[in-house]
Amino acid sequence: MLTSVSAISGFSFTYDNIGGTSNKGIELAIGGDIIRKNNFTLSASVNVNINRGNVDKLAEGVNGLYNSEWGGTAYVEPGSGDYVLEEGKPVGQVRGFQYDGWYKVD
Image (cartoon, rainbow, N blue to C red; front, side, top):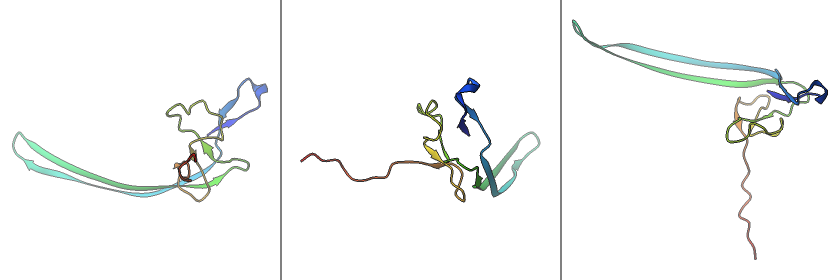
């Protein structure tokens, strides 16, 4: 994750390992030949998987906000991103705005 470093290093940011994650899942695949002739074979296969990524631990002092680097968010300060990491929650939660109604002028 992109984190701030002291400006005396000559850099503003660096990538750092700031926690731990785990992944649990299952993958099933089945395949076979539908038609098998002397000089022709038609085969098919299906693959299904389910994977759950979880944030197990974050380093102390990390707020867990990070940027996707998509749509102009690549050069935003670390800690102000559009994704959030929270302990015990899935990896890759999208951070959005909460709807609070329409602004009206009377």
